[in-house]
Amino acid sequence: MLRAESVRKSFGAHEVLKGVSLQVSEGEVVCLIGASGSGKSTLLRCLNLLEQVDDGDIWFDDREITDPRIDVDDVRRQIGIVFQAYNLFPHLSVEQNIVLGPVRSRGESREAAHSRALTLLDRVGLAGRAGAYPDALSGGQQQRVALVRAIAMQPRLLLLDEITSALDPMLIGEVLDVIRDLRREGMTIVMATHEMPFAREVADRILFMADGQVVESGPPEQLFTAPRDPRTAEFLARHRG
Image (cartoon, rainbow, N blue to C red; front, side, top):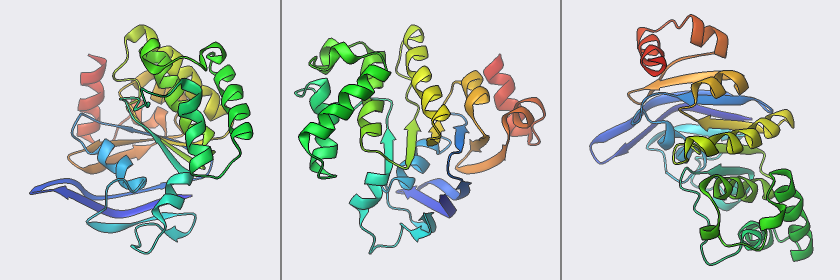
């Protein structure tokens, strides 16, 4: 479904991505792990075209989406992204936050978008909060709403950028349960996370990034129990410590 080849991205003189390549198959869950500053978030933003790559190519469904002639809005309708900072519109209710995208971007009727919003909110345990505003919700509730807003657009690929890192430890489980459900339903997901036990549980493949490169990739059991690269082993040992 998704293929990145030798992607490079710099901000000024600082090269953040140094020739990153990856492939993601339909229905696969890929977790990106690594220290802060390793390039995980920048890679996700490049995959969604929120950042323009300096070199390399990104392909989605056999279309080169880094081609300057591509319809960026069409790509973003199919590749959803959720950030750690929620980014909900504070002046809109929960339901309005969710309905806005399908109505404005996909041309859905307000009735259909409203019905899907309530169904999705019910699935994440927030059916009774449709009329609430973001500042009346806990961090875990806001992040679940952000996930629902992305899912309501019916993307083919979902990118998740450290979505639990700003949450109180007591609330992290609420959000991770939603991701478990999405995985069971076959959603294709690429997620950057510091939650190592969760990554080991849900990922089909794990990519360890360091210094703007994919240092090692493999199935969770192999990477966690017998990492091949010393940098991977050091990171996992430090994290467990």
